[in-house]
Amino acid sequence: GNIISDSTINQINSQKTGTNNYGVTLSYTEPFGRDKVLELNYSYKNNQTESDREVFALNTNTGKSDLANLQQTNLFENGSEAKRLGANFRVVKQKYNYQVGLALQRTLLQSKDVSKNLVIEQTFTNIFPMAAFNYQFARSKSFRFRYRGQSNQPGATQLQPGRDVSNPLYQTEGNPLLKQEYTNKFSVRYNRF
Image 1 (cartoon, one colour):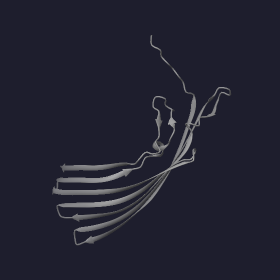
Image 2 (cartoon, helix red, strand yellow):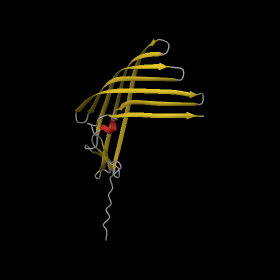
Image 3 (tube, one colour):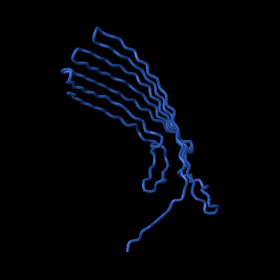
Image 4 (cartoon, one colour):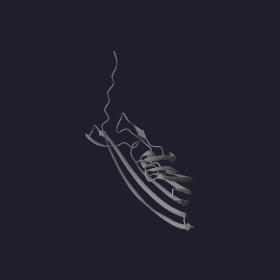
């Protein structure tokens, strides 16, 4: 016959997370004639996240869950600082308008495994293009096109090292060297009502 194995993991898993975010954006616009505008902008964003995971196994001598599982227990801090400088040019006509722009962003991503006294820093420089076009055929018909690039930084739990076996059927492990993602977003819309 078939051998069926059964196992039980008796442990207490506690995870506390906290996040602090702040940012500022400055923008200056300069009109050129009646239908053109140049915009210069700068933004600064700072995101700090902490994840404190403690795992305790059952102590069969005392009957209490007081044996620290040091392979799964850790304190992890993640910081992201982004500085972005950009320019946009916009033209507004009676039936249509369009905008093109470009931004340069430098991001510092710092991952700190406090438990192991390990710090990993990564720096990313990205160029973010953007374009938009709107055309109004009639009062009830319009066409819209949008494009923009953007990046997203990984979160603390995605970066936090150490295997999480709190759900034995879905075990996860963070990667402190995980890179950011870059996305190109396109949208086309035609409205008729």
